[in-house]
Amino acid sequence: MTLLTDLKKGKRGAIAKAISIIENDQKEARKLIKQIFSKTGSSSIIGITGPAGAGKSSLINVTSVELRKLGTKPAVLAVDPTSHVTGGAILGDRVRMTESTDSGTYIRSIASRGATGAISHSVRNSIRVLEYAGFNPIIIESVGAGQTEIEISNIADITVVVFNPHTGDSIQTIKAGLTEIGDVYLVNKSDLDGASQLYDAVRDYIGASEKNPIILKTSTKKNRGISEFAKKLKELMALKKKTKKKQELSQLESELKDIVLNNINEKITTLLNSDKTYAKYLKKLQAREINPFEAGDKITKALLK
Image (cartoon, rainbow, N blue to C red; front, side, top):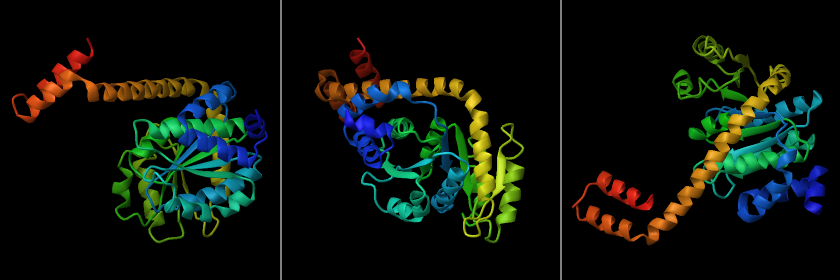
């Protein structure tokens, strides 16, 4: 099959086509993953997350250039949880990432479709395509914020959280679930006022945790701290390689649960639309003859008979 042959050679057209299949054609995606799955799973996955406006795209752009200098072959997946049509912010990302594209880094933006584990579904399989094509590390950037950041940390071997001094109430922002997930915390745009205070706050607030993360200052504008950050990533890649197998076991378990729950969800939605018991209790609920919990219990019981 020429797609697989071209994919193995790392040809850009083949990679783009394969990722489009993953995103848009469930039936073909299954066939593709069946063919490549056994030859994937060895690349380091670096998740880069943090509040909007932290300068992640520019940072990834210059960092991937540095990572290439260190002898690696990085690829970037920018995940946009907000758009079904990749546009807007993503196109901006592409423009900011031209340097790394010119130097041979593969960059692709994908939309996560908003279903349970959807980010996991499209991202995990896009990662497999890039692994098969010989990229390592694969950098995942979350364009949005919130739940996506936590989900990305479940897929990544190394999680990097990026802050900048102008995210307003910066230390409050930090408390929103991001304190547990990072292996590396970056105070980016460190040429701006307030960077030192934010760095101290991050160090005091997060540095003392048992994970003992790396905390660095970077500035893409002044090209400060970037090569140090790239070197730390390469060291972490080597370090995490030792525990990757164990991590992969739990990642595959959570992926399997996602798939089973999605399958059940789809089946039950179809069932409910034609189920007489459901229709009966829905009417009762709408007439306020029964409360929602009671109606839910009775329908569930009937479905699980």
